[in-house]
Image 1 (cartoon, helix red, strand yellow):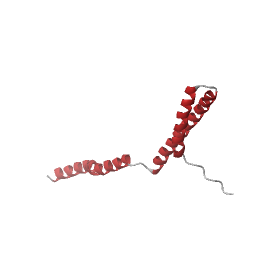
Image 2 (cartoon, rainbow, N blue to C red; image 1 turned 180 degrees about the vertical axis):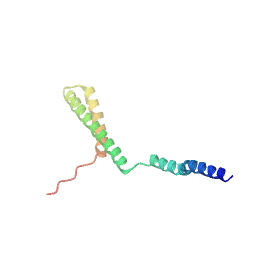
Image 3 (tube, rainbow, N blue to C red; image 1 turned 90 degrees about the vertical axis):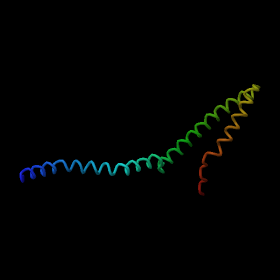
Image 4 (tube, one colour; image 1 turned 180 degrees about the horizontal axis):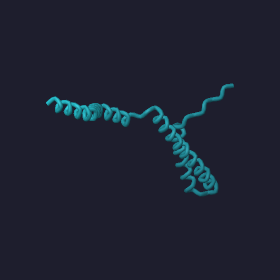
Length: 110
């Protein structure tokens, strides 16, 4: 009987570390899942800065395209094309709406 107990104890000691590991994994799973959800739900400062920079570049690119189109439309308008005059007015209005949303360069110090 004593030999059987020792054999049972030896077998249990070999399987117990696996069980403890599984129990720890199961116990910490909700905490890890909640942490992952918080990470996905929040935006870090660097991500926020990247998004702001990306949006700013898109507005600057749009303003550049509008300025080029406006120059062509103005040239055609001066040659007497009324449709180009109307298009130039609309383009100018769109440019004026974008300009206030762009940051200004700081004044150089004397």
